[in-house]
Image 1 (tube, helix red, strand yellow):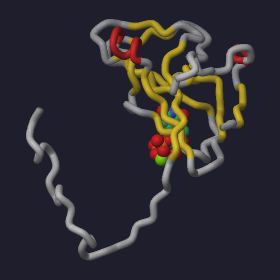
Image 2 (cartoon, helix red, strand yellow):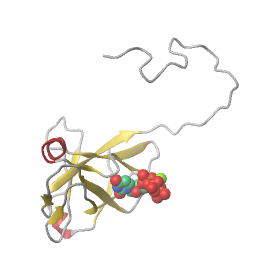
Image 3 (cartoon, protein in one colour):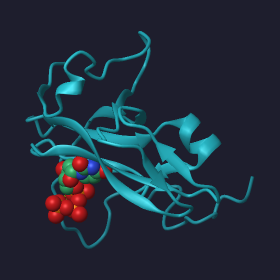
Image 4 (cartoon, protein in one colour):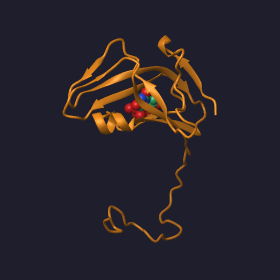
Length: 149
Ligand SMILES: O=c1ccn([C@H]2C[C@H](O)[C@@H](COP(=O)(O)OP(=O)(O)OP(=O)(O)O)O2)c(=O)[nH]1
Ligand SMILES: [Mg+2]
């Protein structure tokens, strides 16, 4: 599919996000910072990506997810855990970078800090009922009802 994109930071002109391999699901987003950003332990900061996208079709959304290496090795994840980009959002994509580690981490300008995944979405309607039409095997069981492990 094709997505309209606005390049808000000229440093991205030659390096739009792209799929790193033919099977990649995520497009890496870069930290469009003027200077290195030091994140103290447990600090978080909104980081601009220099890009705005307009998915336009309500049948799509995009998710901002952590990069696994940064998250696992350095504790750089997202302050909102997952970023959800609505199909009608036209503003700059922002990354809430959260250092959940006990050591400071410095994000360098234009470093790849998170990834964007475009996903299909179903917008549901609610149909109010008193009872569900067919009982299911699970019924109201949840929260470990099937046992642990
Ligand atoms: O990590 C994120 C999360 C959201 N957004 C943008 C796109 C999204 O469409 C918009 C609103 O996000 P969301 O609905 O999650 O936030 P909200 O707190 O409910 O704000 P709003 O009242 O504007 O919907 O903010 C980002 O740029 N980065
Ligand atoms: Mg919202």
